[in-house]
Image (cartoon, rainbow, N blue to C red; front, side, top):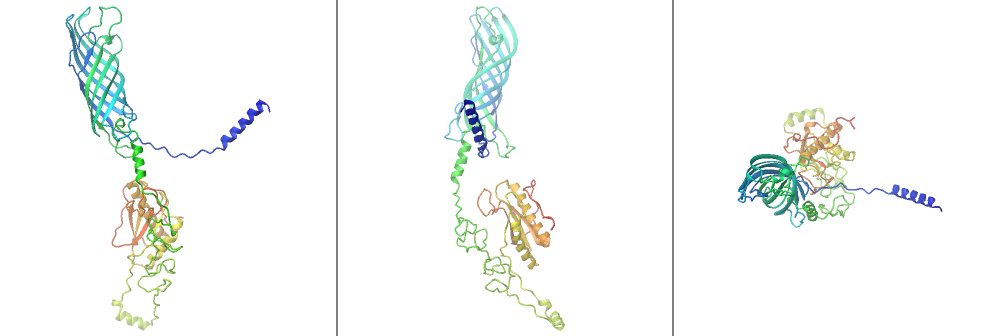
Length: 485
């Protein structure tokens, strides 16, 4: 085989192999760096010019700064400085006074923030460097060649320094720093007033030295994206703190055991009847259903919603007496003698179990798989004309409490719309309530179909709850009439 054919074959094979590979799904990236606060500080110190003339100590200086983290190591600081100092020497009886004003930016490096054994550091070692603009005025006396003069210079500078800070509280810290400023250009030898005109060669560059104390506070409200309070600046925080908290939360979780010994759809951890008969319908706690509480379970009951107050046979069918055929004279006699005292047996339905309706994740459309349950509820309501039913919407805990309140309201409203439009149930016999995420059956913060439900109970004086405040929540539709499917 020629080299050309060999390379062509290898190329085709490699291309086919790459096209056949499937890209593995990747989970969304999770950031552990929360929004953090700004640092605002003031500094006071004793500046001095180190140059050709001996510096008098101490001078006076102060200013303000604003600092914001880039990550856990690097941050940006904007700084201002006003300083006054003087230099004096007896050799030529020369002296000078300086007044300094500057502002600039610095890149600050937290040298010891890569430590993992605690959430926050008490001490922080900082090194920094920056650039800025400055303006200084020198009032000089007896300077060789130049004599007496007072001049103002404007230019730019570079600076650098280091310091140590102590974290007093999450909102407050103090520090000690030492900064050196060096002015660009020929003016860099004018800070003490003496430019060394009497010597040959390169003149000496003067530098402003500024040892100072800093007092800082952290400012910041809530993060607009998450609604959570901003944390203190990240250069104080352990870079792995978020990861450590997530790992600790995982380790503290109970181990999920999905075992369902009796196959009733309720796991053993919450199943209160772990030997339910095969095929028997159970409630949310795994107990065999007896909807009409006639002591005949639903899976054996041929009439699972028997009218209350009547004896039932072994199959759960109520023994309701057949009406007696009356003559007109009988009717008149009953009307005249007993109508005022005639009372029907009061149905005792306050403790009935009515089936729950479940919903898709973040949805409030009534699923067709739940129509049978709503049919059974409708039959109970129709068979008991004096009965009022409370319809309560619930959610799981995946979203905010405000969101879940509106979603649970929508679910209850959708079920009421189905009962009124499909079965002609009068709206005033249904009392809409909502519970949001507050009454979960399964104790979990994860998605759970059991918690996404609408429950029914016999009304005992409850009143209609208005729609909760908040934006629209969930996806779905409310059935308005029988042709709305």
